[in-house]
Length: 287
Ligand code: GUN
Image (cartoon, rainbow, N blue to C red; front, side, top):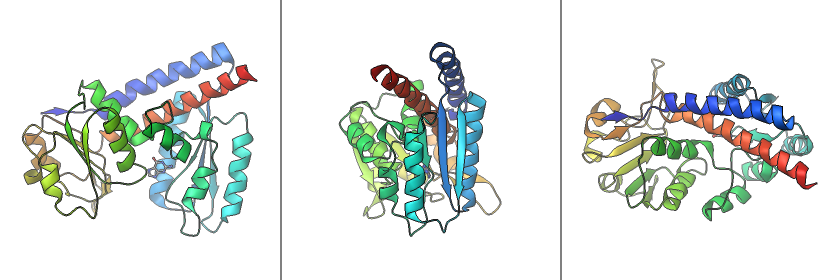
């Protein structure tokens, strides 16, 4: 059994991003900039936003966090996004999800300029990704694909079971694997018999936020297991959606939690921000 070490790969990618930032500054006079919008006071969201802005600083990316109370109106958020869309020093815009109930998430995500949509959640980028065209790719599934690539795991022709069908993780994960020529089954809360699907899979990717959802009897010998879940236990310990201790011995490869997909998500966000900064530079040339 080999551990898919997301921490190590993310460090490598962060170093590449750092070098890219220096190059962009030296050759083009551009410092990549990321704006993060945080609405409300959910501690998990605040923690993610902190990690993202810390990673930006370490990579030399300029980052600002717009914190707003959860009573803020949708119109006010839209107004702030319109300003960021026009701000030439901001290459990437990210609205941390989930948003408060009175805010229409789709309306907010669609208000981000597609060329600054570093989360890849805008319908423009989602659609282009579906078509296999160049686009911003959501950081978490993008990180999973890079992790598989690093270990020379080619999804082509493999039976893959994606557990979870969220717009942020499950759906784009399934799309990317399909684009990589895997045979993809997407399972979700209405799936009648989850085990029937996971047992057949050469690769299982699970990200639903349920402790011990995937147990050893649900995984075939030699399977590759990618755990995208993050759950905090009452004792403070972080675990994924897979019963790691029992499942790992059956696997050919498995991601740990923490240290698997989590660090990759941050690294891919930085990579997307560099991509956005390069788009800024190109659009300057086209003006
Ligand atoms: N909430 C949970 N994951 C994500 C993510 O990748 N991006 C944003 N913006 N919000 C999230």
